[in-house]
Length: 329
Ligand SMILES: [Zn+2]
Image (tube, rainbow, N blue to C red; front, side, top):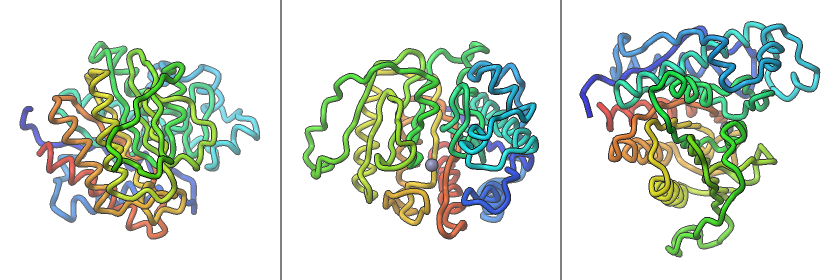
């Protein structure tokens, strides 16, 4: 691995104009400030997120959906499904969010790892948005790298507490096939968690999430780990390790897109798992070590995080950047 310093992508233009909302989008600025205050990164480590191009979005999304977003012609139902107040300013912020994720993918391919202080909008489908997500920056970034001939195959490792339904639907991995249960009885002795897997083409998707949570219809990922309510650090990390090993046996990515949601945290208002802040950092380290050990470039998006105390959300995301620095320097 080369030794260029770790870079991060950030833009004030990505701030989401959604007012007082459970999605505290002020977290992005807070994360950058904390990283600077801690002396972990210099200002020069932060690259400005550019605005994406319409052609980038159209690699994933329908022309109709992008036109509706740009012209403000969503139906009432389409607006309600977003669960954030629609505005043209919000669309503009999402174009920068998406540009930031494209840049993070490109940087990761040059420099092994790159963190986008933003992104991870995994609930957006090709033809509609939902769950705070207007467009799917994860999918757009991967498709841009493929279009530009930089990669053929990518792997999404989605550790947000909510299943990556939009990403799974976009990459269309087909019907689930049987997935062998782990033989170690220490893994979920209650038997209530289960894993489903399916064949895939050029993008392999892994999602670890709380089963009894939004989205209630979960399109099949390549590997879905459906975790029971109240899952704690040790059990979560065992399942993650197992999923990564199984994925690696079946698929060789040229880029990993890590969706590092902060909402598996026990103190999250929209999540029902019980991870600790330290457990979430262990999770991040496990994913980064997996990428480094196999020589897979990795880009990171932050996705959800709705802790009762917004400072906890910021701390969890800050730790993701610190974990990346520990592993990649
Ligand atoms: Zn989430």
